[in-house]
Length: 91
Image 1 (cartoon, rainbow, N blue to C red):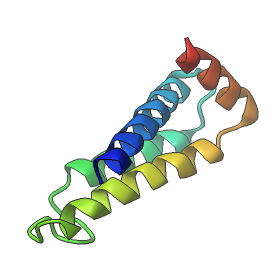
Image 2 (tube, rainbow, N blue to C red):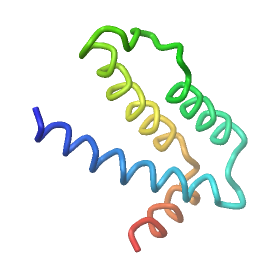
Image 3 (cartoon, helix red, strand yellow):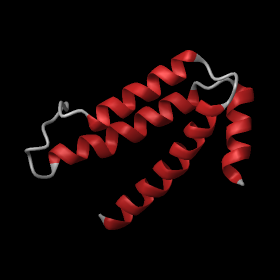
Image 4 (cartoon, helix red, strand yellow):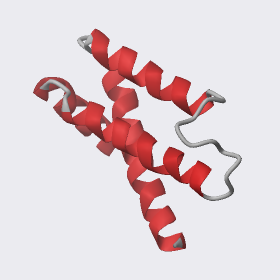
């Protein structure tokens, strides 16, 4: 269980860094900014798909949906922005 969480954190941290650099790119599309704002609002919003009152299940939806949403946005980046963000985050 802890190995999975550590692996998830490593992937999320790398993807979040790549997304951050892609957002700061001068040619970043508007849909990327809107999508990222929606992810941030979902994370800080008190309204969840599965309420956090449920001990484990309420947190699992955040641990699964947020990385999936970030990956989905990154896969739809224009190639030149994706390459620039990957190069920048690799440094």
